[in-house]
Structure formats: structure tokens, C-alpha cells
Length: 426
Image (tube, rainbow, N blue to C red):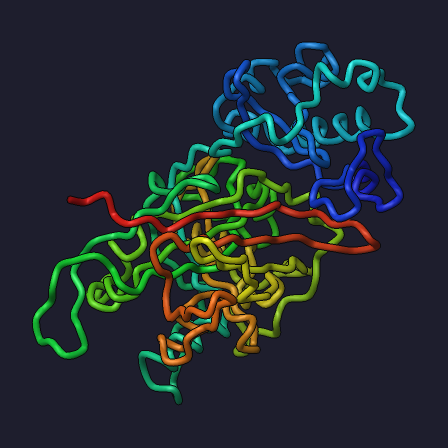
């Protein structure tokens, strides 16, 4: 791990010109998939306002002393790269850092135009092929808010909530990369004034501010992953928008939980930020009371201080910040989530994705969904164009931004963006 800490050091500088507020300094080195008009999909990393073509780096033998096939970088998803294991992927990340550092023995800078592509000339693609997707419910503030609105305010949390990380299994195939249009879903709803359901377009489309971790190592059926070993299986993180249809959800979720209200779309950011890049931003988790069962106990700092922001832009109007939160608020950390996920012997596979659930803080401006921000529509948000929002309207664009910051260095995810469009249903 010595090298991992070294390449996170805030004193490191790159010969690449990097804007001071960039989410992608040399301390980050995320991984993603991109293509250009001249190239097929392949693996790259982001440095400032450029994408470094890692297939070309491999073909130029800069990775020749690392036991990794060049073909791994000539793929449409990161799965094969992640499956190489952390010893290899961390060695690649270290080498990229060495190639891009100000003082380096490598000569990549001389041929920079062969390897670096301006970000505006690339198309960013879905970074991983998601095999299975689990959505947790790990924010106490969010769970309390929802329980207060829909159940008994005096017993907002269900009896099991502080004993285990609640979750449900979602649909992997409808997870899409940032900038993919989101169509307003249709389904059954039960109007407040009716005793019978109706069919039609959801009127209460919402976002949920989340993060998701991606599995980088298989674990076979029948084997548990402990909280101590969990991070060996976690490759990195993305921003995650769990689009939701609240009126469909309210009618369908009893007794088995979300279905059509959640499976129409979820959006992720295109760059996967490694667990190692976030090492300097670890922080204490909230105190857990009552004490959890032994298999959920852990040692060390397992939460991350990552600032999160949601912006809402109505059509033909200005972008407006409506929420500011932080991943450090999560009651259940990623180690506990994965330990609970596998405690029954459930297998996990490279590319599996686990989302955090909505991340809300204690103040009203830190609530991570329209449901909470408008308190079920009773407190509409005032937009800069004079309109109001109880929930999302057609042509609204939601943008989520996330980054960690320390010693003047931002390590970030960029953004995940999606626009709500009318359903193409005739």
C-alpha cells in the first residue's frame, strides 16, 4: 500500500495542464470507457480536461513490466480490467501516475498528442457491465424522513432498521450512463380520492442522490465476505441517481417492495473512482446504537467525506442547486453492506453494483430527494424562472456532482446528468 499512499500525496504535480478546480488531478486517476470518431470503445483515464488512451499506452509498452494483457484495455467494459485483481490494477494506476508526473523517467510527454484526447472529443460510455444490482437504504435521516411522512412519526424507523442494512435487488439492465435521456414511466397508481387504481404516466417522478460501489472480485456461493475483507472486493465508486416514481411506488410496494417505480432507469457517472484514490478522505462513521451483531462490527474509518450536490434545471431556464449533502452521513458503511449481502452465502461477481440508498443529512437543504425537499409536495421548491416544483416535470434536467477535497486537492466524479422526457408511449 506504500505506493498507493505516495500517489495520493497533495504535493504531486503533473506536466498536463490541469485546472485548479478540476475533479481529475493526478491524485485521482479514475477508470472509464470511451470512444472517438476514429476509435472503438476502450479503457481510459481522466487527467484534467483530457482522456488518456490506455490501450495506446499499453501498445507503446509502458505497461510491459506489469503482468497484464494489452487486450484488457481494448474492451467495451472495465470488467476484465477489474478482474485482474488489485495487485495489477493498483500497479497500473501507479504507472499512470509515474507517466504523468512532472518529474518522471518516462517520455510519454514527448508524444502526448498520441495519447491524450481533449474531453470534448470523446464520448463517455457505460463503464461496467452490471451483472446484479442491489440498492441499500443506509441513510438514517432519509429513512426517518420517509417513515415520518408515510407511517408513524413516533416510530419512523422500522424495528429491523438499526440491526441490519436494509436493501432490495433492482434491475441491472436499466442502469445507464450520464446524459442518457430518462423517459417518464407508466404504471398503476391509486389517487388519494379513489378506491380503485388507474393507469397512466407517473405524476411524481423523483431523483435519489446516491453513490454506488462496484465489485472487482468474485466470491463464490456459500462464502461470506467479512467487514475486514470487504474492501478487497470493492474496486471503486460512481455517483448514482436512482430515479423513482413515487405514486407508482406508493401503490405497489406492499408487500414485496419497489418494482416498476424503480426499475425504469438509474443513472451513473462515467468515471469509476478507485477505493485507493479515496483513501485520504476516510472519516468516522455515525455512532451505531444499539450495538450491531458481531458479523457487522468493524474497525477503522469506513465512511468517506465526499461532498454531494444536486442541481435542477427546468427547460430554457437556469441551473439551480437544490441540495447539498455528504456521503459521510451514511449510517451503514460499505463494509457492513457487503458483509450483510453475503452473510447468507450469496455470491458476488465482478461488475455487480451496490448503491447506498438516498443520502440525506439532518438539515432540509441536505435532503437527497424531491420527496423530502418538498415534504411530499407540501413545500414546493421555488425555481429561478418563477415556476415551482413538487416533483420533476418533463424536460427538467437533474445533475449530481460529487467530490472529496483535502489540502487543496479535489478528487471527484465529475457529474451524472439526466433529463426527464415524455414517455414515447402512444
